[in-house]
Length: 433
Image 1 (cartoon, rainbow, N blue to C red):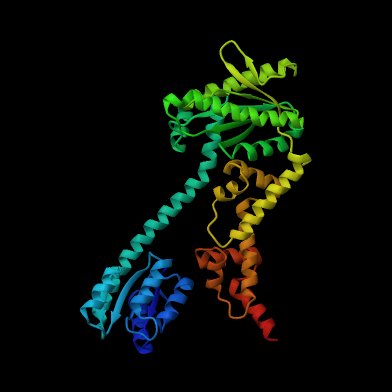
Image 2: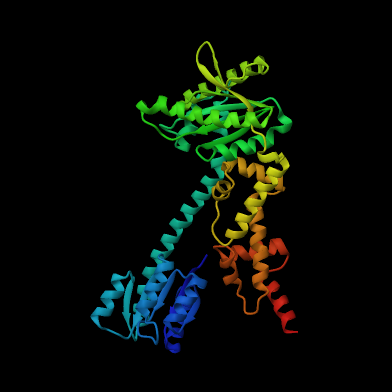
């Protein structure tokens, strides 16, 4: 992708001369806009998003230094090269103090401009390469994170080997000195989904959850706040009291699911013991066949909270209604924020689900990934923008959340069969007829 350059000079001949030198000597850059006033520069900078701005100082209205200051407020990464007829020392000091890369005096010689611009261009190119690499690494990290989380929870389950893999996943996820426990839910798979949604919504207000299925059962990994050694027992009692209150409410609602809960542990290998305890607790509760009314049962090795009937949909709402409500809230969030950068975690947090579970749930329920939904929404909004007289493809791309107009054009054609410019031309031609 070429380096975007914006030239700001109230003298058209001077601006065109600079544009000519850039186009002639620096093909890796693109003169994306020429402005003849500071006010126009501030307005167009938000549309063009330049990497480099070549700025005159003395212009009618907003001068170059004020325009530079305003552009920096919204685009702090822009590099500025000042080219001015004013040789006053104070102007140069102020411009360089504000972060200008260089200060050249008019009439600027071609060789002097070439050397100055070449150095700035090299710096900006290097910075963009580092930024692009960082973003690419972040995107890869976000893609692999749900898989690592799933692998981590699977490694915690009873019978799972590869403790080295468990420790490696815990280290990757940053699960150190953090309390956690496991919950196993079973008994009525046909009504499981509504119960799980209710549980996730209620319990995730205070704790971070990871969710997965294991044949006819569901496992929930509960990640709690970090606590000091002397606080462990009070913290565990507080957590289990919280669970009891939630489960007792579920029992009053008459839901038919049962759950076993293990103790809180800190180390990942120990949390694996919590999963074994949860499984044993659930087994004993099932063998009890509902005769016990209390939520605690004394066992040979430890005391486990044995959960009563769990998780009905709230206020008579069935599972399909809960699913529809989650999808509706997620879609509303996308519609209200499509123009911004949206991560999976942002949408999942809005509906109180873990990112991994939300991603899988959304695809299974809505029939497409949330990212596909967001992409289609952006394209639909772009269509409406392009129908307006005087619309710009580049401006439209940025306004609907695309960082790269070229990528936007590729996606638009893939989704609609037309280039964005062709789509705009068709509707604007119809408007003129």
